[in-house]
Image: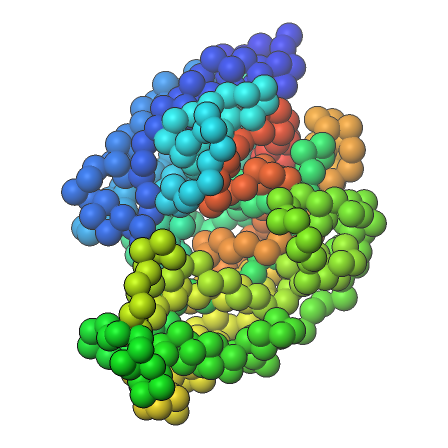
Length: 471
């Protein structure tokens, strides 16, 4: 299908309206939680339903001269979707496009009328779990390639690799990278649409992502609960021991984390963040739904963004061993466990940091109580190589063409394990890392939404960048 009489945005607007949004709604309805949150994912079948839905849509896309669609599944591992689109009209280069289709769990707090597994389209916002993180990415990427072909614009060979384990730390991905090494080849350009954006009115590119160190810290003091009056003063509280050992890695008063979790910040990263802070100003802080009276850790927008992108942070994301307050009796609990998630500077070696933090938490426990920190998958962050002139030009021109504003680059606070894996393997690869996770989009939390207008214009930008690659 080639039609020079329709603009790229016009073509994509019709594809988004008639095909992508309806299929995304079906995708949101599938509760395909990532393996860490659904260990019985294979038996439940949701992951397979989701990947089949995506594959069927890829087969149905009009406007592509050729494509092959394959669900590749290694034994015991989440399926990976591969879509291979040959070079078109003499285009050159090898383009790898990455995304994921697994989802975070439901979380509580969805406002009335919204829920994680039932899509709601409200203006330009499509609410539901996984639409923005990262279900839309495959649709947008393949539609971008089709837009080039319908205009007769050459492009290089494009391979879409859509995994099912990203929200669990991509622990399946290295096995697929090894098994598919011959198919992947050496990418000239990597496109990833799983990142954040500072606003919805321009193209944002991500220059770094933090690493992550997740694990479960557990303290045991008894084999069963005891009357708090009878045991109090004799049996130490597991929660107090928890507080004590956590103080070894995080100063509760200041939030300062253990020295091993810090890294040097490049000057170019500081300069990028300063430019973004000057643009966004107070919106850096106002985008969060603060409880009345709560103050940010950093009130200055520049220092807040710098902390989010390059400083370590710690979140306690779950707790076990404690009943809800309304169900709590006068019982000294036998144990306390918490899920800890450390975010690490982009250049910090996550496995090495994990070894140190585990030792610091477990050694010399108070009262000799069993203290264990079970590390999950440590994930080293990513710092982008210098952007090639052709790519910088394509990013800026596409942002002006489709948003009317120049693009900005900055480091983001999240983690995408695949980028570190690819960057270490292919140091010459160029990266376009961008996304739709802007203010209030709230990936991982309640009321997650995909901004359709942003996603449409982003799709057009991706088409322009892919079309600009010349080898």
